[in-house]
Length: 140
Image (cartoon, rainbow, N blue to C red; front, top):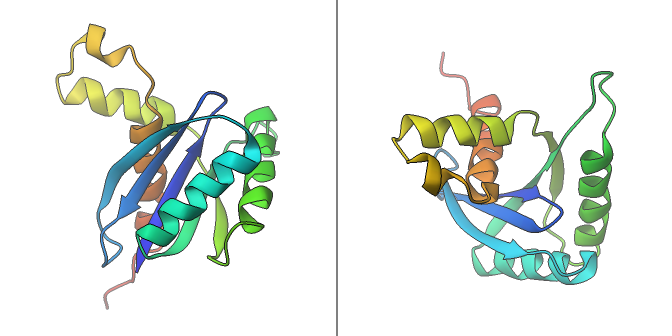
């Protein structure tokens, strides 16, 4: 079962895709934000093309555990996406995904100059990895 993760940003939408066994998260693509409806249609099309069985959308929260502005935008995007596809959606806590992506790029030895760009695709990988790790079947 392939899972698609979405890191919804104001300017870009990062996408990551799992392997068919839902154990490995890999970057898929970054799409430029146009409008909520067009973005949702693009994500729905990519999900269908890749035989995705579940879409995980990152949602951020404030200190009180309530969705912050970006989290509310992600929820609105999820609603628009529900209108475009029958694939099940889940909102997933994406707190610190961008910081984790930045740390991963540093650990990989990427120079400061090359790290300066957007990290939406890698943030989507972090969201997907978090989801996969939390939903990994337990071996007895």
